[in-house]
Length: 305
Image 1 (cartoon, rainbow, N blue to C red):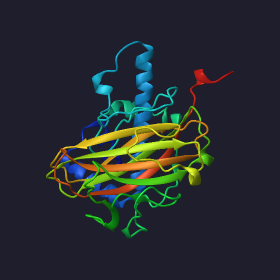
Image 2: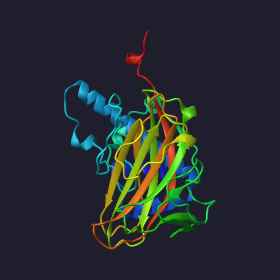
Image 3: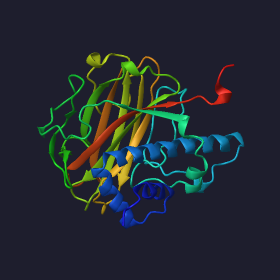
């Protein structure tokens, strides 16, 4: 019998999917690029609908019901650009997120609220790479750099990046500089960084972190900065996903950052760490890194006559 993967994704978002179906969906997403795109579109629509629902609740001065709140990754977010309010993460990955299915199906009039455009980055799937990754801070665009990392055959199939444990730092880090000067930021623009992580030893818990830094400098002029720095550039945002022990599968989550005018380059920062600390150091895998430009269309009442 043919599996309806689109139905499974909708039931995953609504929280009605079984554990066995979740595992099957994870495997299918790894081998089906078209379904992965549909999955990301569904998550982005989920986020847009949730934002609309929360706006309506705020206008009525009523709290958002628990049944309509999405679970977001644990972790602090910080930004210097205080005039922008990010969309809630919604269902960020195959281990996060519960959303009302009736709302997803009942508000099909909103799919154009957000326009999504995939931003080109260097080898987000790592299929075209092999061997050790350059160490340190990136010297230019179009390449990854890391503390200690290598591209290897994946635990399932294809090729993945393996972040090797770092004895001197809490996180093993992966970094890339991206030229976004052609995107022309604005109050309705945001960048969304997403990635899949997996531990090499599920006997220990893991912490995964995504960070975005926006700079006014062009990509070839981004200053080298200590990658532990909390804030650098015009705008900075970070998000953390905690994964308890006993979870051997891929964990996907995302972070959204405003793209104000004047940002010409962005630094992508991905980190993995074993928990609790201090504790055993193990390797972690990274795959399917993507960067997306989301443009929110102003509603009718926000437009100037």
